[in-house]
Image (cartoon, rainbow, N blue to C red; front, side):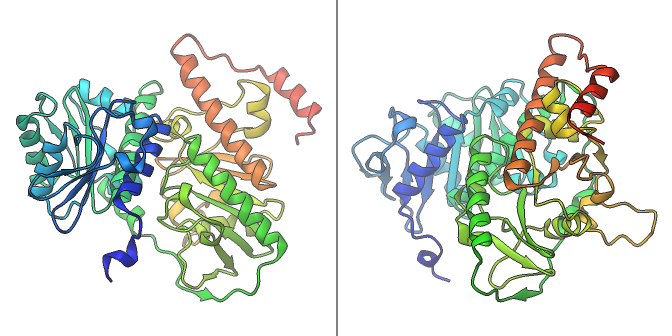
Length: 438
């Protein structure tokens, strides 16, 4: 397939939009970081030197041709030499993200690299992570140090006392890899406050990577007003979730029930913040819209909807603080403030692997996710895979997810200043009576 049919966005716009997003996510500073795209003719589009990263315009983006002639109103980034060095040793890399996100900077100043085996998503998306020794920014030596790591098969490289460099087959791929690596790093740092960290072994990673969705497809009729409204609400909350860092761009799933065995769900491996209403996938009786690929968790959503008719929306997500609990054995006690308990109740720990069985285990003794969470206990922690929440509306599910993350962050912060004091049983009893909780 010709390249232009896959991506019709000009490199100027692609770089500008990606940098705006990285800056908005607070993953770099006004003066820090640079992005580039390598074209097939050997030209490189790159962010300029000494221009505010928070207000880039498309005209600010610089083109450096194969003879190193510069087109644009500014000089190219002072880090252009290491971008060029990476492209020379790795022709498969077509875009690079360099930035100073706080968690990866923390690893860089401790001279460490994050172990991404805490989640299968981070492990497979992040690729091999290397470490480059310090050299003066913009120097030939820095370019040599970084390029050597990429030559050895690394896809992401932590720079000693500096930041990180990530390569990809496209700028969107490089961004997703960069985001996944920073997310894993933040989660690891948060988890240090909770206890021993659990890493996935080869077998567990293989199970996670082998799951596939049903191949049964269908052609839906005209959408009802209910479907159109649900599509709009899901997209609105997906964008809000990404901007509030409750979701990351390619992971997590969000669905809304339409009928008895019919629901809308996020597609597989598409950027959550950039989704449009038409990208959501309709699933009816286990078959999905032709020409689309639903989330690999669609069977889990279907199982929960079939089991609990009162549930109208489900989210599987990876907010950093709540997910930190998922990679340790530390329980999350929601008896912290009334809101936390009312929204989350008793938060169960769901064993790793349960989410890949999709309700089809072979022995009666085996459990599915629906055995751990119920309408009156609607939130759970999935070991090494984030959290799951259910709600009676799309808003209700999102609200619970927000409360889940806020509660987790408050507990982690509390541990750093004193002893966590949960509300006593008589207070919980009062809450249950006052709000009619069975």
